[in-house]
Image (cartoon, rainbow, N blue to C red; front, top):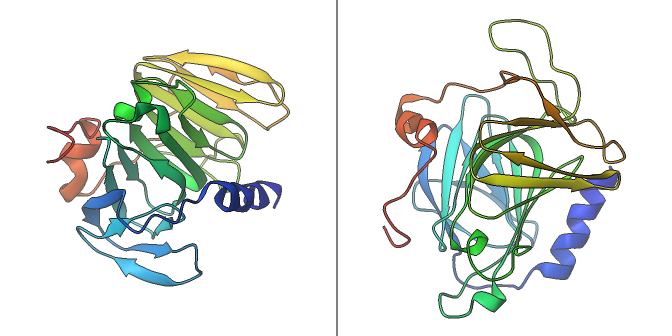
Length: 230
């Protein structure tokens, strides 16, 4: 797959080989596994470390939340694959900030941290099958219905193939080879393909999933954290 080859290229170019953890699993319900850049795989648990090069995968009915050192959180929905392509955060060096993530399949909620609020506005990127999402302080959901089917809530009908973006706070900018679109709080976007211009939707597409009890509070509240070092 072209997108998968691109992610591998990003890893090869940006992986810094950090020996310390940049993220930690802070909520987990179900099964979460990781494939490391060296090809090794393992099952993760609460307080497991997440480092650049990791591809995380949740199984059916599983949710996981990862907190990064800049205060950002990523909540993974069931049947999701997510890669930390690059991550650099040093409190005193905002000019070195870098967070490059990739949603390979499934869905997630992202709550931005300091990297999206200081220094280079392009330091944070969330790559998907059909577009790259850039932000500056926000909470947003992304669901990939391009590489897999997404059923409409309360129905057996499926959504149109593509990537759906829902912004809960702040603003994101989605861009691909066809152009770019800004999506603000309370708005919903759809990107059918990398060569199709992103567009706004008239209403919530209804892709959300109800988390299991251990993640109800953090997922529905947007994963707001008390502080970077909590």
